[in-house]
Image (cartoon, rainbow, N blue to C red):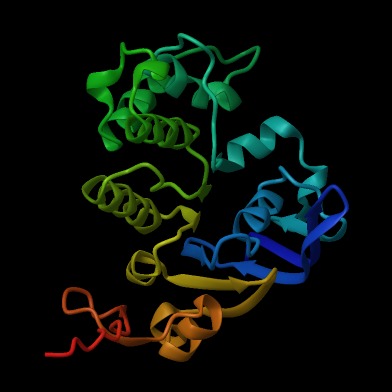
Length: 265
C-alpha cells in the first residue's frame, strides 16, 4: 500500500497560488527526489506533504487517513522533516538539539532511556557530528549546522523522512556523504523524500524522480526512464546531452558547450 499521497493539491501563500491540481504518489520504501528550477513549487509541495502547509484545495493522505486528522505526536513518530531553514535555540549544544528528535517518543510512562541515548549517539555518528556534541550550535559553520539538523531528524526514527535541500551549505564531499546516508536509510526500509537542486545527484540516488516546472509536475518515474535531454531542456531550459554515468550507469546530464568567440588573427 502507498503510504503518502496528494490529490488535487492547490498550494500557495497569502492568496498567491504556487501550484494547482497536483497529484503525487510517494512510493513506499523508495527514495523520491523532487527537482526543478527555482520557485517552481518543490519546497511548497514538500511542506504540504509534511502538513506544514494546508492546501487550499485537495488533500494529503497518510496511511489511508487525511494527514490533517493525525494527532501531532503520532504524526511526529511517523513522519520526520528537515525544513529548508531551521533556527536553533540560542546556546543549545549539538547533543541537546539532536536529543530533541526523541521528543515524540517520550510520554508520561516513558521517560529518557538508554535506548534514546543510543539513538542520539548513532544519529550523530551517522552524520559525522559526534566530535561536536558539546559545542553550541550557533558557533558552527553552515555545513556543520546542516548535518546537526539532519542528525536530529534521524533521531526521530520515523519510517518516513522528508528532507528539504539537505545538501545546502555542504561541500561536495559532505554532499555525497549525506546522499549516501539517505540511500542507506532507504535500503534499510525507510521512505525518503528529498528536494535537491543538483539533477545529476538526483538521477544518481533517486529510485523515483518528480520533475516540476511552473507549479506543475512535468514527469515522474524512474530516473533511468524519464531523464532525457528533452526533459532537461523543457524543465530547466538547458540544452544538453544525457549519457550513462561511467560509475553508476544512471543518467548524467552534460550541458552543451558554450560557443567560443572567434578571435581574428
